Image 1 (cartoon, rainbow, N blue to C red):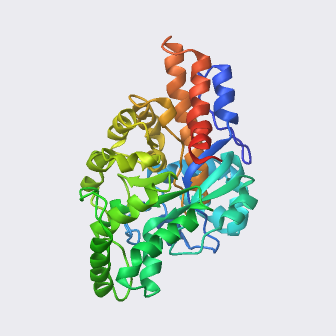
Image 2: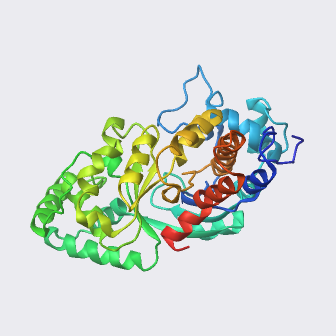
Image 3: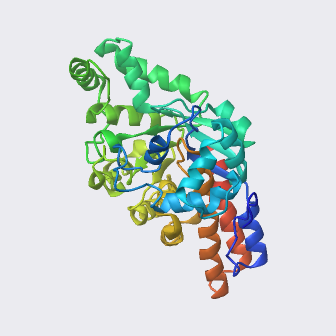
Length: 390
């Protein structure tokens, strides 16, 4: 691929014509994503930003470029930054460091061909682009997801009385539901899924809130299982989609407590059927998520975060995600955060993985090419538009 050119299906010569065109030109809906850094970062911060699990500085004996996302950046983003694909890490970094953050965004976001970004704006240690800025720099539209734990933490910081918290949170949720297209919970990071999912009464909520307020003086961080159950049920009552982080993430979570099968006590409750439940990322539990999407009409899932971090191996993860769940229950996401490289590579790897997997099934006579194109459109765009109303 010459410098400056971009062909998402470069090297995939076995893709039949209609499917190749569909994979290359589909305007995606990225149903869970974050903004990009607005200030320049040094190389250390850059490399730390594509190590999802560790929050430590990169050890001196290694570079994070020697990882699946690092290789993917050098393969797919390098030509758009003015260097050859697979350029050495030092050359890639020099080209990147010569560009302002907004310039990086304008080079790397449009080729992702995302028509609509559904953005979680609830957390960042560094300033990131707003939905308005993201739309301007990418050429796509944006909508917003509201993070439940952040709403509760803001009420605690405001000094609300324990007896007033339940009603105040309901009011905040009702107001947010008028603007946002959905909600998100990070209960996976805070308590894990193995908690009592019965809806707690207001008295129990007040007691739990009082204990939380007494314990969290410096930095409010919602992790109480009673309050987590309360905020989740409050969001579900709105009927808006509820996104749930599942599986792989940084080391703040206990991975074994984020298996979505632990959500069965919640999913079996009649209250949970009020809203679509969107299982995000799911790796390495994407097969379990596929089962839940088959078993419950209101459960959907994606393999977003995992695709970026398994890189060249992503087509296997994508194939496994297509094994069990109905295709109307799957969506595309990148969960890209901070680095516009992640927004682009998420799109590239998903398109290539889907095209390669579906082309094999077409070649083997298992699927028609027309069905392959239709499923690609469903998962890449149509399902998200239906669920979120965008």
